[in-house]
Length: 359
Image (cartoon, rainbow, N blue to C red; front, side, top):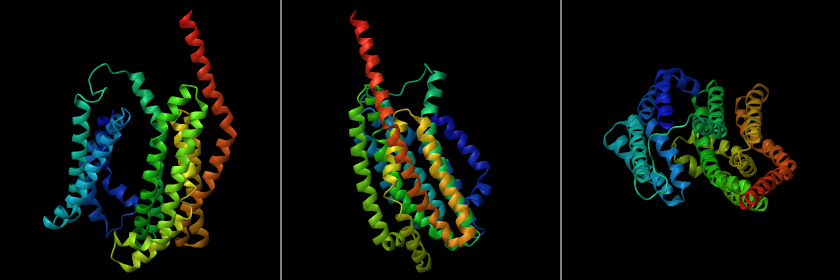
């Protein structure tokens, strides 16, 4: 499935490169650089999807350290190869893309070598495919896919709105979005990391363990988001200097990061609850809650500039990070008893099954 989707995405992305990049916010000045990077980067789509997707098979079998090693291998190799291809080989933006693809290839080979080897209890094999199982896999992955896809649409929409005001706002937004990735990617890892634990305990009929796992997840997420909030408010300037030496872009990016940081802490609640519901197979709740946050963002994104000017566009992020978590928390509080009942019903069903087997 991963390979087929990767090949299909690669073909689609190549065929729509120019209009897609223009939609993403590229200007006539930045389009040539974007085309160079994007064209080379797309060659690594298969490697990226296989390394990321199959890495879950390593983690879920109890080899979290191996999974982390595969990620670190790609990250460190990318850091090393970037200056080599960009400066030493004088390939510029193309070199950055090539370095990324080679790093993705290395991670992919690491993951596949481990999963084809003798160590994991469940290794990669071929044959015995089930269409029903494939559909269940796609359905289970639908919620996180939609969340990530709409998150990217939010970035595209923001860049498209800002592009009307020039490259300066787009550049500042890009730096600020990189900061938000530092917030949301680990946060998603923390929240999603407990998904299998919650799903297992729901099936085992252990509501107390579900609440305990979510309590620890929430506390850890709050500690992380609070730390990043303080960093965004106090250390935004050093972060922007990583991306640009331009003082004008840096100054604007600092302001945007501080605006974004206002709503960072409540994201711990949003991610913990939504990912938890998804882990327990309750996509009928997790998907609408996720969509509500996106809807609030888009409403603010297109309303604020018309009323308060282009610079107010950046406030769409904290608005969508403050209001939806409150709604999500209230919803979960109301549904908590129902979730506990679902877990207990699983235990009752198991007890009945065990009695039948004994008889």
